Structures are given as structure tokens and as C-alpha cells.
Amino acid sequence: MRPALLRQVAIFVAVFVALELLAVAGEKSFLLTQVTMSAYYTLVVLGLSLLMGYAGQISLGQAGFFALGGYTSAVLTTWDLAAQRSVGWVAGAARVGLLTSRTDAFGAQVLTVHPWPALACALLLTMTVAFVVGIPVLKLKGHYLAMATLGLGTIVYSIAVGTARLGAADGISGVPPFPLLPGIGVGGSMGGRIVNYYVACGILAAVMLLLLNLVHSRVGRALRAIHGAEDAASAMGVDTAHFKVRTFVLGAALAGLAGVLLTHFNGAIGPSEASIMKSVKYLAIVAVGGMGSLWGTLAASMVLNFLSLRGYFGTLDDAVFGAILIAVMLFAPQGILAIDLRRALRILRPARGAPAEPR
Amino acid sequence: MPLLQVSSLSKSFGGVHAVRNVSFDVEKGMIKALIGPNGAGKTTLFNLVSGFVLPDAGEVRFDGRPIRGVQPWQVAAIGISRTFQNIKLFAGMTALENVMVGRHVRSRSGFLSSMLHLPSTWREEAEVRGRSLELMEFLGIAALADSEATSLAYGQQRAVELARALASEPRMVLLDEPAAGLNMRETAELARLIVRIRDRGVTVLLVEHDMSLVMDISDEVVVLSYGEKIAESDPRTVQKDPQVIRVYLGEEEC
Image (cartoon, each protein chain N blue to C red):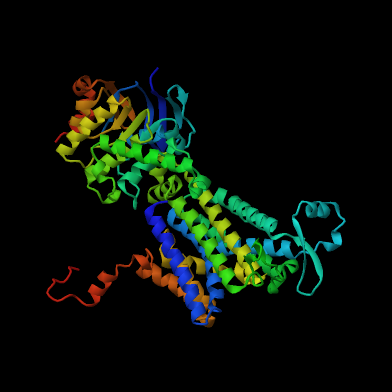
């Protein structure tokens, strides 16, 4: 492992352990629930940061992919197959362990798809949809992806809110926890708040590590090259469309994964997760963190999602994120971590004796 | 068999014949220059050879195989590399990283193996870094490895772009006005460099305005005027060709 990476991982672990200890010591461990949710939302934002900062493309469909993943898992893990137990494929699926029997919230015995195969289906579906949308669109230069994904997001939202099987405006509830190890998993009843917190942090750390490896590799270089000078990248043998599509699909997969995990954590998913404003929110967070800066995105996402989930922005939540997006584009297009604070302070209060900077 | 065969190539943009019925060969191990006044079709010809533009008629063969309809990114894989008239380095990357991108076609790691940082990936990464540094050493720019590429001096940027083009170990490089914007000393250095590149076994095809550079290092010269080839021979003969003097040297000299 590179020394710089080792140091970054050490800081990551230290910060999250410190958060937990502080929260517990201050008897405010209920706050960890929102930190856990922020960690899952951060997965969505990291995928978008990669796409925007490295492949130079904007997606307004991240919420759509999140919902696609979440709903797929919710449907499969709550769909009671007990009555069809004797049907051939149900019996077969049960025999190879794809199904699981459990007691639902009303005390009834139900037979549903196990969360692991449901996760596989959810990821497969999100990635396939991203691939099908991405292939024709990413062959074109320019920002056609933003428009195509805007359309996709709208479609997913309409389907979610208009389909009775998906719970329409209420969404789907009663989603079981996602088991990882005996006694450990994602979901309210699995090991409690602190275990869930560490599971989420662990998943976030693992994804972060994979993405950091990616950006410091041949693939990361190729993506930055496309962003820097597309013509020259292709003259160097980089199949630009291929790399853009792969990055888009990877970003969609991360959104889908986050959708699945958060749905199991909350035990429910609703159509608001698919709304366009959610996608804009993710976009605003990436802008704050600095496009392509994975650590900046992570920090911005944890802070802003936490504040939003705690309700600090109240009913103005959407407006706040819209305003953040505009402000960042105007004053700090490279992200707020890129602002040179010393320089900003110097402008506010010129040092005595030093000549004023020429304008 | 010549390494590159250009036969009866034509390309128009709207009503303008940028390249009209141009044919020439480039033999292996040679430095060949394309010259001509502004708008003579030199850059279009380059873009045709490197797959950025499709010809209306005629064909380009590389090592006997036609390269019509090949995507630009595939041209690098078959052994043709290029530089750009207005240097196109990758912004936000160091000089070394720029050169490392040049080894893209000589390496294979994809998304999955890169994310997992598999042993095969880091071995390949070390090889890419090593070969790129070696090449920068060869071009005398190893000291610039960690500098941001686009912040370098113009002449240094040219050298980095050259290193990047050579990193794919091409059989042929296309240099689009490599001396543009260079002073006399830098141009002389560049001339020595191009000769050394040829001596490494890389065939060179260059478009150039700087007549002294062309006459010093080229083995053969093709002269274009208004999209058509008007002369092709060794530099001495070309300089004495009355038609060339009239359309090119006579008009340009001042």
C-alpha cells in the first residue's frame, strides 16, 4: 500500500471511531443513525464524483439508480412466495438457498428471496440499465448524458409513484435486515445502532479504497486524460467511449448498492428517493467537495447529508441544495477545499508593509 | 514494401478540396517531411493518416494493411503515434503521468483489476512507470517528471508530447509542426532529437513550416500546394524545383 494511502486510511478510521466514542460519551448515540445513513448516501455521491471529475460527464440519474436498486431489493425480499411453495421454480429456488423463511412484522410466516440474491439482481438491473442508456449517449461528445439521465430519473420516479405493486406514494415497507455475519448486518434489528454504524463505515471504507486504487491506476490515468484532452487521449489509444461507459456503469452500481443497503437499513423505501431533486442534491454535494476529489466528496457528503437528515435545512432542504450548487459554481468551481484560505484572508485584510497585490 | 502507402487520397470540406489525389510512400526508417504554405492540406493529410478524418477517396496502407475506417484509438494500437500542432497535453497531470498515458496500448489493467490492485496490476504499473521515465531520460526531460505538464515552458511541453507519442513504442510517429513556437536553439535540439528517434528505428513523418529543420534532417520531402502534391524528392532537389520555389519559397520568403 502507498504510504499516502495508508495515512489517509488511518485518518478515516480515527475520525469515525472518534465520532462514535464522542456520540456515546455524550449520550447522543442516536445521532449515529444519521451518520450511518450519510455513509450510504456517500456511496452514491462518490460514484458521481468519479464520473464528473474523471470522465467529465454529468449524471442527473443517480437518484434513479439508487431507487432502482432499493426497490428491486425491497420487492424481492418482501414478496411472499409461501403460497407458491409447490410451484416448480419456487421449490427449486428454495432448494438452492435463494429463498429464506422468516416471520414478518405481523407474525406471519413468509417465504421471500434472500437479501443476497436480491442484491445481485438489484446490481445487475442497475448496471444493465446504465449500460443500455450509456452506450449510445456516451459515444457523443458533450453533455448529452445529463439530458438522458434526467429523462431516466423522471421515468423511474413516475414508475415508482404510479405502480401499486411498488406501494405507489407510500413505497414499500417491512423490508428485512441484510445479514452479513451471524448477528451483524444492515438493518434496525441487526445488532443495534453501533454495529450498524461500523458496518456502514466499513463498507464506505472498502468502496473508498477500491475507488482510490482505481484513480491511481491505468484506468484513472486514461479517464483524466479524456477529461484533459479527449482528442489526444484517443490518439494515445484510449477508447474514450468505452471508458466513459464503464465509469457511468460503475457510478450507477454504487448508487444501486447504496439504494439496497439503505433500504434494508431503514426497512423501507419510498418514491422520494427517486426524485430529481435528490439527484440535484448529489450533484451539489459533488460540487462542494470538488469534482474528482474523492476525499473532498466524502467529507462534503458526510457533513451535508448529516445536516439534511437531521432536518437543519427544514422545509427549505431542496432550496438549500440548489443555492449551494449555484454558490459553489460562482465562487469555488473547483470545490470549497480548493479555496486558498490564506489568499482569501489577505484580500479581506491586506498585510501591513506588504505592497497591495496588483489588480 | 513501404511502411506507409498513401494512394490517391482526397478529402473536401464543403466545396474546398483540402487534399486532392495525393499519393506518396514512406519507407521504413526514414524521416519524411510534408511541407507547403498555410492551407495546403498538410494537417488534413495528417488527420486522414491518423484516423481522425475519413477520406472521400483513396486509401492509406500501413505495413500493407488498409487503415480506412479504423477508429483513432485503434490507430495507436497498430503502431502509429502522433503529436499535435497546438500541443495537447493532459491538463492536471504531471509530465510523467502524461507519458504514462502514452503506454496505454502497451498495458492492459482494466477497472476490476485496478480497483482490486492485483499483483499483475502493480507489476504492470511499475513497468509503465519505469519505461516512461527511461524515455524521458532519453529525451533529456527526466528532471521534469513531477512537474505539472501544462505549466512547463513551451519547448519542454513539446518534448513531453514527443515522449508521450514514443511511449507506445510506435513504428511510426506523425509530428505535426514540432518546431512551431520554438526558438532557434530549441529547434536545433529538436532536430537532433528527431534524428535520434529515427535511429531508434522509428519512422518519422513530419509536417513543418521551419525550412531549415526540414532541409537539415529530412531524407525526403513532399511539397503540397492547395491540396495537391507538386513535388517529391530529397531536400536538395526540392529546393531547386522551380515550381516549389514559385508556390512556396517564393511566396513565403521575406
